[in-house]
Length: 431
Ligand code: LLP
View 1 (cartoon, rainbow, N blue to C red):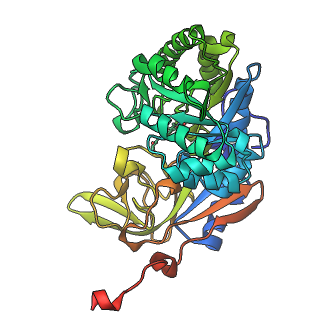
View 2 (view 1 turned 180 degrees about the horizontal axis):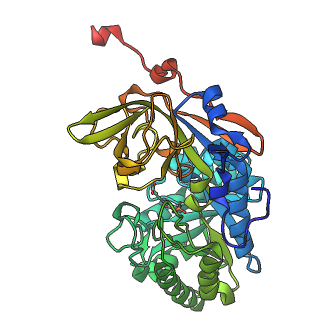
View 3 (view 1 turned 180 degrees about the vertical axis):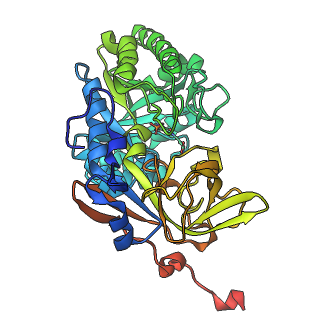
């Protein structure tokens, strides 16, 4: 954990080392955290966040670049702050994320804003803050931003998010660069869109943006998309547009189990090969890569049960805490925090939520467990808490940040009162 990150590889897995058979977060025992904070709870390693950020930043050394952390992966203020303190900017996708990015100390001049449906209020807030870049996803949105900016007497810096029609070869729910997806404008219509933008007084064209999907484990889709973006930039410049920024989006995949995603150096080589000679600033929007393996979900075994010959380990964490297995059939490694109690047998690890979709693992070889045992679900730093909900009136989990031998609760577990905050019973209507 303390040694410098190997070039291009976040040292994330060592953020949760096993010492004398017991799983730790950096230098703090996960059992100690569970004792102090309760379960379920997310535990993040600040060292792993920093190591991942530094590795990606180092891979792009030599080209002007800004790493705009995609808050959607993990929006906890302390997590965002840890990355911002290393120099990260932010990629936001809503007024709420903009608020969080600013609250965590991200400089407005390093914030980019993507998303297919920005409301007037969100546009106004971003204009007021003076963000670096609006990634515009349609011509109707262009007109809206132009109008709001003119009303505020400013010019909004914009890039069009172009949809290059490339198959990123990932889960369909997180493929965004296909012709059929709702994102961006077709690259074939980009010249017309830029021509329209050039004539508007409320916007200033500064770049081109492209994001094709998430958890990409191959480089070819990035290379294909970027070669299309590259050709477009030549055309745009020939038509007199000043293109200073290329936002290449996020999407670099991580290892949850057997995947072999490219490392940061390989990814940077592909991006730089496509873009370096254009003299643009490269903006990146990594989310998962910075956070996924910097976090675990800690959960406690409630009981074991067998229905016919099917074994279930029922834990206190559920799909409302971590929806990825249910929503994407995603595989996330689960291991006991203590030493294994015996040889593995296939089990489903499930939560208490009343749906058969509520599972964290299916048919997974797992050692025997006893009530009260702690389990750690790895890869839970990205799209874990951020996608959690109160389904089944379950208070959302606590979040903990660890650095070396210190830890802090960076989000309290929700209380029962939190569950009903803002609700009223209007007697004249309810009876
Ligand atoms: N930029 C844009 C415009 C995006 O839409 C996304 C992710 C990112 C950046 C960050 O992508 P990343 O580097 O994290 O792959 N909930 C899903 C992932 C959804 C990704 C949505 N967009 C999951 O748990 O797998």
